Image 1 (cartoon, rainbow, N blue to C red):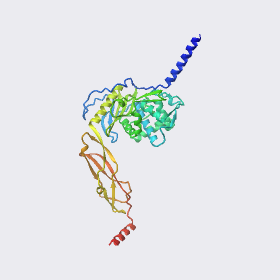
Image 2: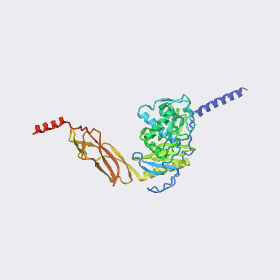
Image 3: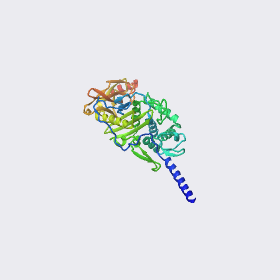
Image 4: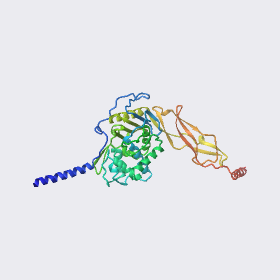
Length: 404
């Protein structure tokens, strides 16, 4: 009898321990059974104009700094986005951090609602606390729905208000075919976007270098190592230069992926939506990125003009000439081997009428590759030129008399 009681106690403790362990388990609604297997990709002709044999329903390859589209397959076709929805959620978090409205060390308390999400999750418990940094890990690496909602609630108070912000930001980015119904990507009627719109928000997200601290991580953990996180994006491990960005899979969306990579100074965004299998989406993304890196490169160009070329006459102003300035640089997209064919042309009028304010755009330095304009740098006024007053005319007359 005593032995039976001992065995019963052992069983109870074992059950309690296993339940505690289960509460720390990370659930991922992605097929990660082949995470250790390199990406398989059939050999294709990567020449411009050739068929890349993309199997997904829609796809796009974009250079994010210029917005140039390098490859397109049905990129305006609307479809469910699954968890690549979280690109917009992560963008809003990055922007809140940049505005100093949120910090990585800030503590977030999980609500009952956030813990009820289902799907991919880190099994947050109501009242459990994690830092913004930890929740970003869970969202970007393991695509945790509960962590995403917790971040949204921290920023906006509720998922509903956070989704309203997502839709507002989408409109600001001219993502005109996108409507978000949640911040996680769980299948919901009316929750739609396009490969083109996903590329736009992906390009905006990677402007924030902080996101790559998370999107490039292959494996990490939470809860002092109790919860293991494995990145659902195989490119992070197996593709040279991969920087992210987000996978997504649901029954309605199929297998989706927004893949970003950078080699030398060239950065690319490849979006694949509606692939039949996880393997297909990675294969398609690899083909797109390989195509881009094989045929294109970007170059950052500064103005090579001299002050004399940027000096303009001022009519009816308190000064007769004004110096323009061409500051900064522009990123241009070139076909491989064309970097030595860049020329610059100053585009300015001979004279401008006062008043002119410092910083006003006067013209541009136009950047050409052969005969095609590939970019421009604004020429702005270096100082104010006020409208000519009678007192200024008198001063000029007296100066001339004094000199004589």
